[in-house]
Length: 177
Image 1 (spheres, rainbow, N blue to C red):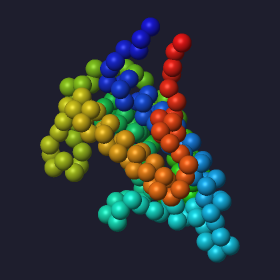
Image 2: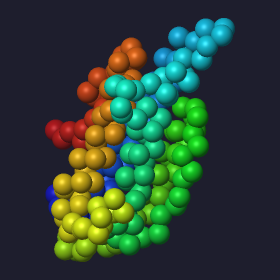
Image 3: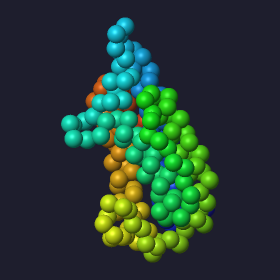
Image 4: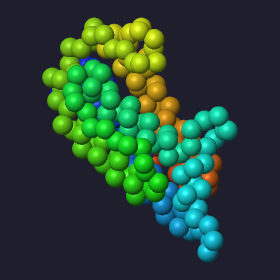
């Protein structure tokens, strides 16, 4: 039986999957960084603080923002209380733990918390009192913004020589016979 398409199914499950793929990328980043370290320099630290261009956030912040986008979507769409993370991660292991906590939280969000919220009003502090509907928020802001940060994190890793590709980014497909 095909999965019903609704505001929950287009947000929470795909973000859980993408955060899992990002966590697997972090594991590959740790292995890669260990091969590049020198007696005087940690490549992990350099990798976590690297960015694509000077005016973008570094890798570590890209992961934090992807995590925040995912968990805060439950608050904005389903009015669910969400955990607060302090953005203090300094290592790959700490980032992986953050993603694990984010996914664990997302798995507690029930479809009925979000289904039917397409017309609800969603506003963010930096929108200066303006708002979007729940559907507009999910499709025009949340999903593109979430994947922007996941993609930027992926691209920073590629730029630094990780041997990763589209399969790593997508994280597998539910192919059928």
